[in-house]
Image 1: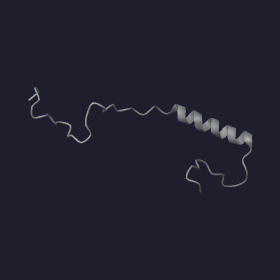
Image 2: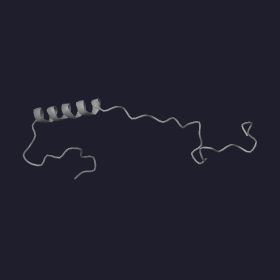
Image 3: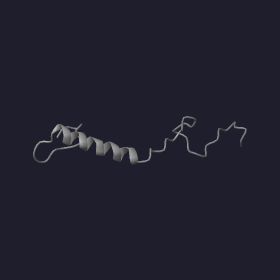
Image 4: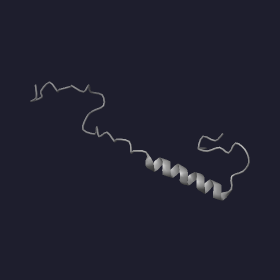
Length: 60
C-alpha cells in the first residue's frame, strides 16, 4: 500500500459517484470536528524550564 493512501477499496471497483459520496462524507465528518487548539509559545525558548528566570532579571 502506498504511504499516501487514505482509503483502500477492499472488493470491487468504486465508481466516480461512489468516490464522490465517500469524499463528501469524509469532508462532513472532518468539518464537524473541533479545530485543534494552537499553542503560541513563540515568546518562550524551548530549552528553558517553565519557571526559569534570568540571573539579572528584575522579577527575582
